[in-house]
Length: 314
Image (tube, rainbow, N blue to C red; front, side, top):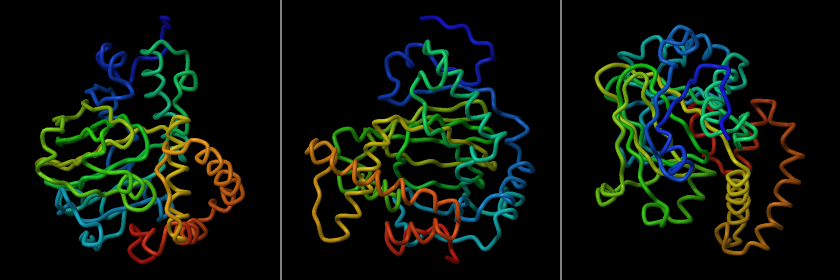
């Protein structure tokens, strides 16, 4: 099906990659977001000033690829100062859930609409792009984002500066096993890196206008070059990804009670029962998450005392 687009494509990729590799393997993309007024340092500082503190995470960019999350160096600046001084701050920062701001929501939807139409769909809903979320990154020169996994699919776009984005194939579980995948989903995203993983990696050298597609739970690390970096993750969750994430969360909660659990997929009938119980409870709790204080409390109860690791004074 060929569907004409009424808007100029925001994200473009080789058609063969969209047909052959999406959504199972990483590939390079191009985009038209560099220089967008919403993605400049002054506007990002303004956004940071308006966001709840628990949706902003930042620390030192002086990190190892295989970084122990308990030994991450902090940065003694407030979020707005980090943005304004990013060239010299030696920091890495992410503003989470930027889709909660309407202008940014539209930006994310326009980007995914161009991908949906390139794949022959009329809309992002038809293409299966649901629970759309955005994460905006600013990083100082020569900063490292340690090896980690993300619990969503992701079009990563480089807005300013240069960086290397290295992504690794873990489909056989030889980099991160079931227990590590669960831990990265519900507790801390970092996973250990070993040099033996190198043959499994694909490195994308990104400049402004470049990007890459990163599949669900493919481990990756990132390094910036000699200038500050602005980049953005345009993410979504399919129904299957939401199912897996919910099962990981419920399994983790049960395991914390001393009840060993099989990984999702090992017992489909039991998975279905768990999912029903978890989602019933989540529907009751979700309205409480409008409060930042309650979000912190819920994370601490559900995920443990270190769940708010990015809130240095929590």
